Image (cartoon, rainbow, N blue to C red):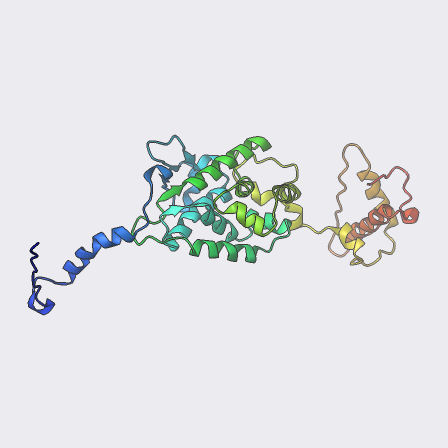
Length: 312
């Protein structure tokens, strides 16, 4: 069989063969080494980039025509929606085309005073170690060098959001909150389930941590996270301080303390209010009451002899 060989002149002898030609010749090779994306496995993601316009609560994340899934800002609390929006930024920063559950986890862990961080702290987990493990997983994912980074909603993240909606219904809440999304990570087959296994976080531990934070409150508005643990944020647990021996003993003020106990023992109108000029001893009365409550808990009733006062 005859073969024909063509002699190619050096590049210096081909004035028309410039850098643009080299770049165009390499485009097919770039497409070959890119990681293909199945169109039926992802959904288009359009998120509002300006959190300042969240109050309008009208932005819609539109999916492909083949999907009936709609993600609207109106069904999420502000903190949960901020996490979803920030997850797209995380994907873009790491040159990922698909926004997945690991991006949402990183967005939650980077929220200052975020509810997710408080939940994990309540579960006994170091947030910095959890964030480091999330970053390592993100860095292992393939990168896409194109302008379409962060433009697709991954199937696993879509499933997690749907699972969070189910938790919302289970708790009787009106909005999908950050704790619902955190619970969804426990069943995330892509990333969350293995992460929680590595850190020994079970679904029951998460639920206990969430219950200790939100108590019996329901999510009835778009900013419930700011109301969780309000007493811990803006007040002091004087009985805990008395138990730890951090309060000085109170001398006197017996009549005022007894009167507070009497008011607290009522069935109605049981909120004592201490009014007075600075320095007259309002804090001392509160600390004396805390001492008596703690003494009652320990069974020492000598300093708490008001018969109708039965404080558990």
